[in-house]
Amino acid sequence: MTLKKRYLRVTHLLFIILLLIQLIPEQSTKPAFTSSLVKFAIGFEVLVLVGSSLIKKEESLALLVDIAGFVYILLAAWSLATAKYNYLNDLLFPAPGRVIHQFVIDRDKINDNIKSSLITIVKGFVFAVAAAVPLGLIIGWNARTGSAATYITKFFSSIPPIVYIPYGIALLPTFKSVSVFVIFLATFWPVFAGTMSGVLGVDKKIIDSAKVLNVRKPEMLFKVILPASLQQIFLGCNQGLSVSFILLTSAEMINAKDGMGYYVKYYSDFGDYTRTITGLLVIGFVVIGVTFLFNKLQNYLLRWKR
Amino acid sequence: MTTNKIEIKDLTVNYIENKRSFNALHDVSFGVGRGEFVSVIGASGCGKSTLLSVLEGLYAPAGGSVQIDGKELHGTGKERGVVFQHYSLFPWMTTKKNIEFGIKQTRHDIKRTERSRIADEYLTKVGLSEFGGKYPSQLSGGMQQRAAIARALAMNTEILLMDEPFSAIDAKNRVILQELLLKLWEGDGTTERKTVVFVTHDIDEAILLSDRIVVLTAHPGTVNEILNVPFERPRSRADLVKTEEYGKFRNKLLSLLYNDIAERIGGDEVVL
Image: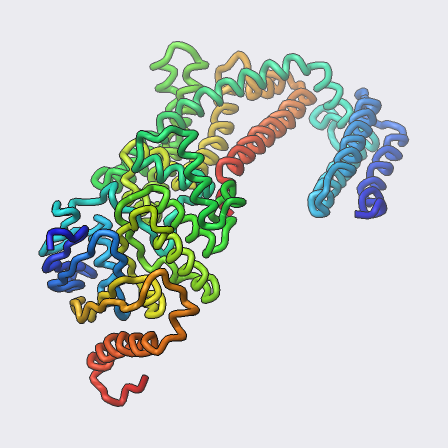
């Protein structure tokens, strides 16, 4: 790639425009913390430039630069509509600088809440996968139980897991354990169903080739049927994961003392919409981060597929 | 007759399709001697692959018997290695892992390091020493079959069952693979040859490789003729095709195969 192609991009012009916009005097009645936004934008631009110099593939570079371009346009529009011209109610719509500033002030609190949410998700999710995959393999592999269990699963997975919350509260001692329980249910059924449909769909030729090798039953299940069903299992896991985030944040808004949902709900009750928006954006980044890592894991485990 | 490695007697196999049972094989009998290479050929639908599934232990016959070393065959067995036309290898294991996994199934007493050494040895024998770390999806069809053969040989079973292993391979590579199999099977005379049942519809392949050829007739599948292949070993395709006997033998086989088809379509106007 030529230097021109690598560094001479419209995105960098957008970055400069964003900075120039910050020179416009503010009309907002609340402090806009423009310097926080400028620092953030510069930091982001540095990352984009570092990324541009490291990326080898032309398409990936274009993707990075385009995404950055969108970020600059959004930030520019946002700061024009709030801090600069105050088109929007500045109680409900904080300027971008305010949100960034708030994040920096609250970062320890936010970190703790993220940690609390993630621990709950990971517990419920890991328990669910650890239970659903072996059960799905065994029940699905057994010709007699396999198809019947598919119908039973359809019934149970059609119950939205959120309706278990009141029952969970009666059943379990702490609100944390209720959240884990609900996430367990939300993940268990799709993973169980995915595992079974994976098992039932394994190519007969693969099963035959394992049979003629005289593979014993445990190896048949975990070395042959499991990898052959892995893609379907991951479909179930992805579904479970996205439902888990919805459930957890909703649950945290009902009755929790920590977690990201709690942070958003708690401050919106006080009318602190800067923190509400900060919380929303942080949740977005956390979900994207977790999904990204999970996809990396999936691609690694399915690397033999093309 | 008890000296045969595999003894097939009055084998009858029914297939159920769309709730209708039809007779795929009827009263098929022949034996395969120890260390003998027998090909089964016939037009498509003659039941040759069904016959092999019975030998593999994947399909239960309706009547008759199959004995291996005088013992009735029940299900799959460690003394038989199989190479299919497709999907012999597990796509989630590298080529080498596939071979090691195969060795582990039949030879429990072999340690991990020894398994790895044997796998490398057979990868080299089939010309894949550089490809042990690749997944099957990264290999061509021909290379996948090489690996499948390497696995079957590395498992060191007494019997090798091969179900049209080369029929999905392009013509040039097919010839190369046939000669590779011939070389590996014939060996250097120091080791005992494996007993092979090889299903194919390729006449030249059958002649090049086999000691005997079983010709099946379709609907239902019955043994039409069993021919001894009258060519000295070690063989090479180049020498074989030059001889006059080769052409004669080939024609004889062709007529056995196609008379059958001509009879079935019921016309003398069928020109071949």
